[in-house]
Amino acid sequence: MLIAPSLLSCDFSKMGEEIARMDKAGADWMHLDVMDGHFVPNLTFGAPIMKWVRPFSDKPFDVHLMISDPLRYIDDFADAGADIITFHIESDSDIDKTIDKIKSRGIKAGLVLKPKTPAEAVFPYLDRLDLVLVMTVEPGFGGQSFMADMMPKVEAIKAEINRRGLNVLIEADGGIGDATIAEVARAGVDVSVAGTAVFKAENPSQAIKRLAAY
Ligand SMILES: O=C(CO)[C@@H](O)[C@H](O)COP(=O)(O)O
Image (cartoon, rainbow, N blue to C red; front, top):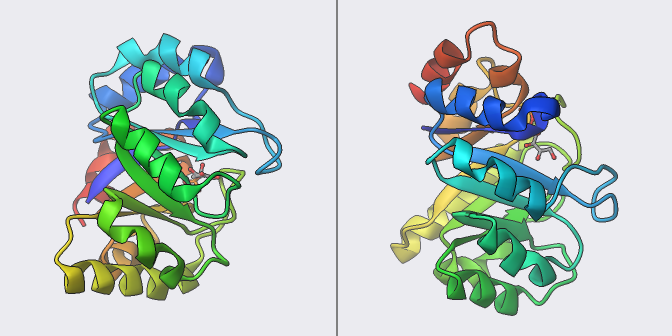
């Protein structure tokens, strides 16, 4: 299991150092939650801040856009050093054009599904994606409870990926920690995003190691 600590749970007054701390603790990717206060009822940061913190780790930066009109901002996040960009299938941008734009910048592209969006919604795009992110909480806030009823969705997407012989990773995000990681792994998730479980751990390195063992 790859582990991507969610920076949403970090101390934003020292975001660069927090990224370096997670790098040292063994994180596989850095997960950056970009929220606009419109697509989700919370605000975080944009590409200018990401550009400042990019030099603090060489690990892949996995940017989750929880914003309206994601297409408009792809160049900004590409210029800021994103390696993976995921955007919501429920957003108002043209999905094919947004995938094209991400790929034209040499970046891995992913679609994100909110809890109420069914697995089948992503099937028409699977051949063009590098990643599908299944939300296991309602997007917007860290520290929520894991929605175990999202696991059949993960299994359905995994089955479709395997049926078509595709090389698409499944990522899950929200409420993942020691109590839920086994279920997540069993369903076929390849990458787990963890905010609270890693940043609030006494020893983040051990926390990552425990989660990654699945
Ligand atoms: O994108 C989100 C929430 O919108 C997630 O990345 C959470 O921030 C994960 O935090 P925990 O549930 O692990 O605390």
